[in-house]
Image 1 (cartoon, one colour):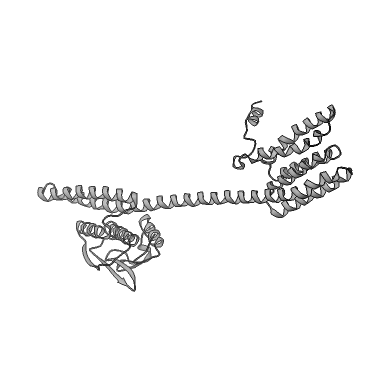
Image 2 (cartoon, rainbow, N blue to C red):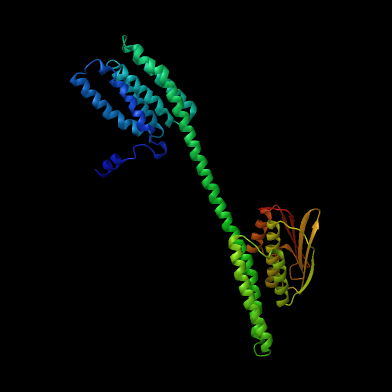
Length: 368
């Protein structure tokens, strides 16, 4: 009972169809044209009410039908029309509705064949009558084909629009995932670098606490400043905006290497970099220096940035423990760096010789 009540409440047609399907039911009025001149008998009137009671639910069901169900609805419409041909030329309306139901067939060729079969069925049904044959065939020949073709094309357009909307939703979803991955990489790079610096300075402060109170206080102050800077950088990473860019990354690299007692050899040229290119270079520098401090076991690190044939080239090399490709640890930091460089059309190369050398090449005007 609840299921029946739910069906009666509707919606009787898919919401995307709008209200036009209800409007088309007015076409059933063509069945009443005869009765403007001839009063129906009780049996004929009862059969008419019964027919409408069967066809109207069938009509609404055709909008929800899929596969073989569409053909079943079309066949039922043709059978109802054939049964009424001898009694009412308005039976042509059932064949017209059957042509419109072909909109549920997804393949164009099959839909066109189904419409043609309905017209042939109507022509065969007209053999039952003589006097009213013209009144029956005229709407079949003039209305059924345009209605059928129009319904099929409208359905195809609606399905294409739905597919396009799904594609747009997928693109938006992928863009959201990409943005989350970007933020994840940025947070990893920024926090990894900043926390490594804080850990080194905290370790140094612990060693100095009983030997040199003033030096210990300076280190604690540096820890506080580094923590505040890390907080500011995390906030900037969330919005994808960098106020200080490469200059800030270089200053942090100097501080990190000095705290780890790694000698820095710096040769950085002034290059006009686009926002995206500068962001990638700055984050690559942060990640590379963090790796030198945490994993390399180096005593010297060289950083150079130059312009070669219109391409910004960043090179970072250390004299650490890496001697072959097997010594390179490919963690989240390097993976994120590769993805970020690739997103702006750049190239990243790693070489292990007497230490690790990183080379980054990015077009100066690169955009994300």
